[in-house]
Amino acid sequence: MAKRIFITATNTDIGKTYTSIQLLHAFAKMGLRVGVYKPIETGVVEIPADGSLLFQTALHLNPSLKSLSVSDIVPLTFSLPAAPFVASGGQKIDLSLFDAPLHKIEALCDVIIIEGAGGLLVPIDAKSMMLDLPRYFKAVTLLITHCRLGCINDTLLSLRLLNDTKLPHVWGLNCKEAREDFNLTSLPYFIHHFAPLYFIDHDINAIAHALLDTITE
Image (spheres, rainbow, N blue to C red):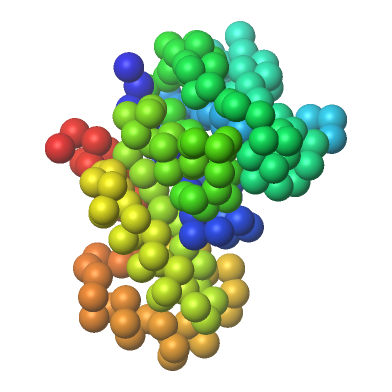
């Protein structure tokens, strides 16, 4: 079985796909064969945009993935850009339908990035949430958080959830906005309570190593 890493965030549009791509490059530089999987993508009109970008990146780094197609990488799509529960009209989604594509991909790689949709409590169906996927896949989680005002609360809520459910995880900050405000309003708290602090833009190699260390513990 390949080493499995589940990518989530404190909300949507935080940088899951961006971070996934950075991790693919980081792991490839370590000499690992990389793979990628996005079980569910919503807001798909013709082709899954995020899944296609992830697939093309992984294929460039690991040509053995050429035997796959985008439908292997993203087996379930919905046109409405909403939580899967809403986008599907509330239909039941059996998590076992994600097994065969995952096994097909990881047969060709050493480490696989599995990207979720939205945050941890996004409902997949009436019973399952994104939070259930890393446990189902037996994956370590990478939580990505933003640097806007409110990031302390958003980060702590997601970390509390991961801790309470005993899911192994690493977390990092993706500062898409100017850092000056963050440095003034939020960074002092994080420095006081967390060490080390990881920033996606500067510490992706350290994050990659931390994830691998967490998997092997």
